[in-house]
Length: 106
Image (cartoon, rainbow, N blue to C red; front, side):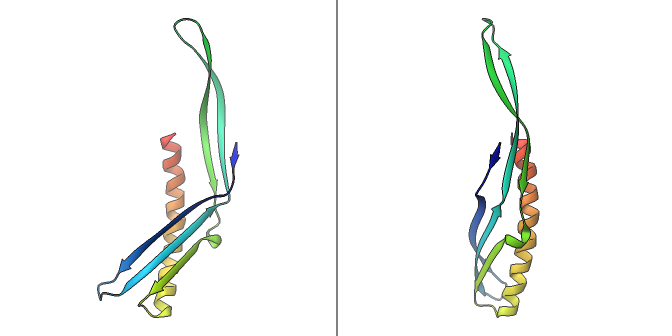
């Protein structure tokens, strides 16, 4: 089974040691989510047969170059640019962790 048009979005505020406030908006589209479903069957004590579906595997396909991080606030532009780069790296790592956690939860 394939699922399309999923994304992770969020927003937050970062306050530096100097008191500078930055507002963040993030968006990480998931290009494709594939669920591998295994059909099984189960028989209860009365002998009635029930269908059962087990999710065997989950795969998320993302492209880090499509991640969007918008930083606005008190910092100079060159520092905002560094925050954007670091947030994109963090998002990429978190998306991989999310996929692993999703598999474990199922």
